[in-house]
Image 1: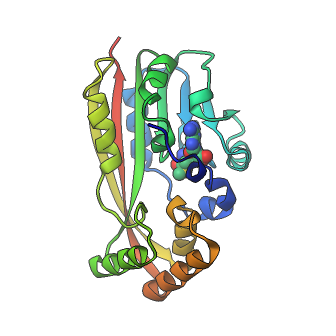
Image 2: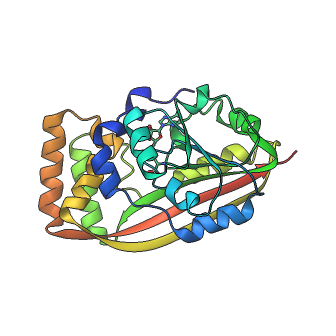
Length: 250
Ligand SMILES: C[S@@+](CC[C@H](N)C(=O)[O-])C[C@H]1O[C@@H](n2cnc3c(N)ncnc32)[C@H](O)[C@@H]1O
């Protein structure tokens, strides 16, 4: 099965909003992923502007990042000059070493589902680890959440990850890996925190999400106006990061 290429490359159009508004990942997650993985070189798939990269780089690991969008890759290099950046999609990347860890933050769903575990297995050293994780953007107030979801629905935004509370992406990974004998030691963990988002930052977060980026400009502005009217001066967000871990069985 292929993924939606047009949609997977919309992030670079909104690199500033992406950088300013998207949440990062908990330090505890980064520490636990590095504890789970054997020592050695690390590969990141879909590194974007480096939101996860910076946290892993802070632990002094040797990092190679694969990122297809040149605008995201440029921001990544500015932020993490110590990381090796390969500009292209993971499906076309030819590893030049055996990695102890492959991780992907908020990006694994863009990689071809029919090939991603073959590619992962080929990129990893024996016993090498894979970690995929995603942030879920919850709205703490359930009434506001329902009203925002209704705005999405009213404009035909049906696949947004903004207003859903289900860890479906981690579950999809679990479903795939539990049937793949090349991987073992499967583990799921989640990390939750709350953060107040001022209205402008919340609207930038919406602008950075592909489901809204693919709308025509007039519809997107209408959605943003309606969301703006609902959230007033800001909103309390509940972020949950879903992490799925596994390692090469051989
Ligand atoms: C939602 S962003 C996540 C970026 C970053 N990891 C983060 O956590 O902020 C998804 C990233 O995946 C990249 N991407 C899309 N398709 C890809 C593919 N086939 N292989 C590698 N990266 C891909 C996009 O260019 C984008 O930078």
